[in-house]
Length: 405
Image (cartoon, helix red, strand yellow):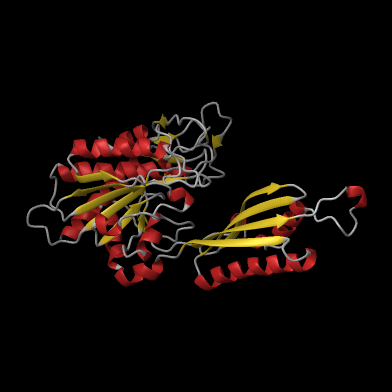
C-alpha cells in the first residue's frame, strides 16, 4: 500500500488531543487509531508490537542477518491532531493534476490562495490532498505515521538489508505531552528521527525553547456607579497585560529564528479573568529574557492594583534540541545524503515549533525531524501531495540504507 493510501484511511479516524482533560492519553479517540495501527503492524509482521496503557505504540523490525551490529535506528510519528477545526469527521479530497492556482475547498467558503500560500504554483501537476475546508486534514502527523508504516512494509518485504529498526507512534504531541511517557530504553534505538510535518527534504534539528504561561487576575467587583478608586476589572487588567507585550514579538511579525509571545486564550469577567500564552525562542538567553519580562509585568500589575491581583504561572515545555544534536551531526549529514539519493534537494531549516524529538533528545535519544511533504498545518488549509509523500518515504528508505552501509 502506498503512503498516501494509508493517510486517506488514517485521517478518517478523529484523534484531536485535549489539553484540558488531565488524562493520558488526553482523548480516548486516539486509542482507536492506535489499535488500528497495532493490528496493521501485526499483519505486516512487525515484531514486538505493543500498545501500553498510555496509548504509546511500539514495534521492531529485526536486523537482516549479518547486519545485527549496525546502528539501531528508530522512526517516530504522532497520532493526535490539534483540536482546532476538529469537531467533526474529516473528509479528505483528492485533486488530481492540480493546476497550481487558487483552489476552492468544496463548499466550505474557503479557498487555498496563491497570494497566501506562495508555494502552491510549485505543486502544479501534482496530486493534491486537502480536507473539504471545514476541518484540519490531519496530515500533521498522520502523514508521518503513513510513511513510517510504508517503510516498515518495504523492510519486511526484504527489499534491501538493514540494521534493527524501531518504530513508535505517540499520543498528545500537539499539547506538548508526546514524550512524557515514552519508553526510551524499551524503544531500543541509538538514534531516531521523527517524521513530523514540513515539505519533503526538510531536515530540522533547531527548534524553539518553549514554555506556557498563564496569568490569573482576581478583580474586585462593585457597582460601577460607585466604583471610583475601588473597582478592579479583572478582564481589563488582563487586556492591559497584553498591551504591555511588544507587538513586534508576536507570531504575525516574526519568522526564522525570531521568537514570540502568543496569546492563545482569554476569558473572564470583572471579578476573575485568565489569559494564556505560549512563549517561544530559539536562543536560550532571549527565551529566558521573555520569561523574565512576564514576571516583571506581573509584578508591575500587583504594584499598581494591589498584591495578589495577578498570579503568573510559567511551565517550561521543551528545549532546543540543537544542544544535543550538534555532537552527533552525522544524523543531519546522513539525512541530507538520503534526500539527495531520493532525488530531493535537502533543506536544513529551524523549526518554528517543536516535536517529540526535542524532548526525546534530552531524554537520551537524539532525534532530529524530517519533513513529510505537507503544508499549512493546524488549520483547514492544510494540504499535502501524493508525490511529496512518496519522496519523503523514499528518503526514509535511503536513510535506512545509509545507516546499514
